[in-house]
Amino acid sequence: MLAQPLTSPLLRPRRTHRLAVSAAFLLQGLCFSTWAARIPTVQQQLGLSDTELGGVLLAVPVGSMASLPLSGWLVARFGSRLLTVLGLFLYAAFLPLLGLATTTPQLMGALVLFGLASNMANISINTQAVGVEALYGKSIMASFHGLWSLAGFAGAALGTFMISNTIAPLPHFLLVAAVVIGSVFLARPYLLPADAPREADAPIFVLPDKSLLLLGVLAFCSLLCEGTMFDWSGVYFRKVVQADKDLVGVGFAAFMSTMAAGRFVADWFADRFGRRRTLVLSGLLEATGLLIAVAFPGVIPATLGFMLVGLGVSSVVPLVYGAAGRSTTMSPGVALAAVSTVGFAGFLLGPPVIGLVAGVTNLRVSFALIALMGVAVAALARRSAVD
Image 1: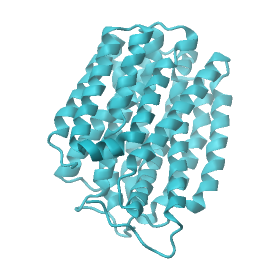
Image 2 (image 1 turned 60 degrees about the vertical axis):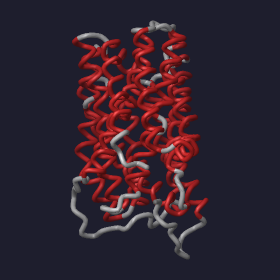
Image 3 (image 1 turned 90 degrees about the vertical axis):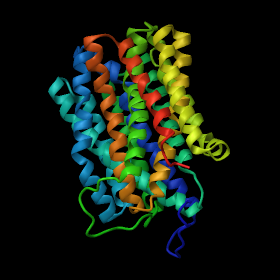
Image 4 (image 1 turned 120 degrees about the horizontal axis):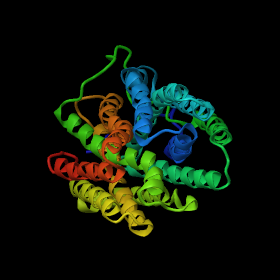
């Protein structure tokens, strides 16, 4: 059962909080997709092979993992509003550093910082969402993640425009950073002030119990697929599909469009057919879409395959995070931090693993292996207690 709606005369109308948290998801999605859309450009500028790119991308999970214990504790100690503002500010501020990098070590250093900020923003913004969901007393988590995906689609479209007009990454990144930083300070007063208990003596790191660990592994498998699509879809279309320059971003845009659309209907679908069935179907769609893109690497079939992958991943993380927020063994903020710690590791580790496997074999084999993560989602969902 969902947490009871919060009531306090100090709180603004719940719709105001929902709009502010929605803005935070939009800004986070825009910031990340801006980098993801320019990865093929950066790879070419630095002359990186697929294997070298995979190694470079490992810097992001290094930064994220370094911040995992601290981020969860900071949210529990100081509240997610402060951490949302700080996380988004740093996320945007570190973005131009990626465009300034002219050597591989410089890029890796910038990516470590980018990964650190990404995890801080991820945990704090989702904790805000859990609090707003409690205000409404019903499942609305998927709609928040739909906005993140919508921002990702916008970022992909903007990236395609920048690439088509031969605009370098740095001015592109500076523009987006300015928009994000300005917007987050405008939204700050309207974020939820007390969405979860803040624990002064909260431990630095809390291991999830068995049920939360299963939720984390579910998120890990799906986010591994999602992270692969973000970082490698453009490269896949350029190298395997061999799409024209203007069509390199089509696969990523197709993936983002169906992921965004799926998240806006995921709450309704899960209520009608059950959360467990929704997760099983999601995993099968992920696997099927990837295998289609691998078996038929043409522009049209690969695009259709990526659309299925987007539809498949759309509901997994919102359903898992919502279930974590309703945990009866931990406070919502700490439970969410624990599950997102496990899950987000997949989002960050997937891209470098793809590069390393591609270096030994090729990208088609790498994508075929990632399809197994979709199968794992379907299998693990049957054992979960999301309903």
